[in-house]
Amino acid sequence: MDRLVLAVFLLLFALQHAVEWALALLNQRHAARHGAEVPAPLAGRVDEATARRSRDYTLARGRLGLASSVAGAALTLALLLSGALPALDRQLAGLGLAGPHRFVAFLALLAAAAALAGLPFSLYGTFVLEARFGFNRTTLSLWLADRLKGLALAIALGLPLLYAAHAFFARAGPAWWLWLAGFLAAVQLAIAWLWPVLVAPLFNRFTPLPEGELRTRLEALCREAGFRTRGLFAIDASKRSGHSNAFFAGLLRPRIVLFDTLVARATVDEAAAVLAHEIGHYRARHVHRRLAVGLAAQVLSLWVLSRLAAWPPLFQAFGFPAPSFHALLALASLGGGAFTFFLAPISSWISRRHEYQADRYAVRLTGLGPALASALTRLGEENLSSLAPHPWYVAWHYSHPTLVQRLRAIAASG
Image (cartoon, rainbow, N blue to C red; front, side, top):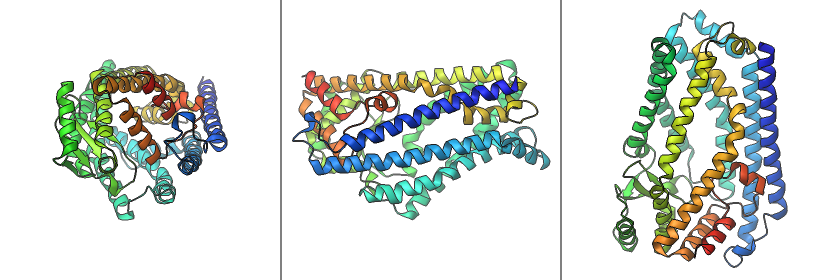
């Protein structure tokens, strides 16, 4: 049976990466052939030089993404098939670690290995690729500080969560998965609530949007929409990157956060249209629906793990002599993607629908269809978004419609 388990995993793993890499290569080829062309809806909005830079940026990011994916797949197979994980487990046992301490040490070391493997790609992406296209503004000291802060947060939050998870495994009986699901849901909601106030300021400075025409317009828009917020803020995103964006932080009364790059470049009408789009997500409960779906998926995943927790063939297939909770979570984190990868198109399709709905809401609320189109075009230009992604790649991976698709939909909505 253990050989059958291994064969099924390898088949799905191979299929996952064959599809993923085929889509990536198809998108690269499509961008190379058509990426420098300005689509008809963007004629007069985007010049040929920007289209060429967008193509080059898309190709460069695509090559880096492929390299990262290949390296990640190789590392996953090496860890799962080489016997490294059972050997690590034996080493920890030999050091006298048992129970929750062995559980936490095993998973923490695995997470550290994955993080270290990703560092070269992060360094190259930041200091070579992003710098080549004029986006990077991060210094090496700031990059290192971000990583150290992230490590400190991972230790401060992750280790207690791992100890708590083990307590549920060991003491909650057969229904451990349900208790753990409830605990994790509470933790996630608490983090979402506290993140804007306690965690995000560790990495960026949030300052109230200064008095002036922009603030007055955005506050009036919120009142018109009946949308209660915890304030309008600008974030010092420009210290790391030249990319522009905006987002909401929080669940019930979110903070409205604009990148300082967006504040500096967008017109008042464009910023108002972008804000109306974000309000549209909240009015349609998109954020809360996604959270609910995510929590439901988490419950289902934990239930599946509970069915596998005491099934010896799963563990024997990867060299573990007997079931254990830390081995279960390690196998799930490394190999679970092979079983869930094919749900990605559904998630992407739903997300794109939500974006269309938020765009329509923004147009209805403000009547600023042209300004929204202009803002999206500006963001696309400034971020060098791909002008010619392959439709299959879009269907599988894009959480947002392409710029051309959004402009057509905005024009049709009046």
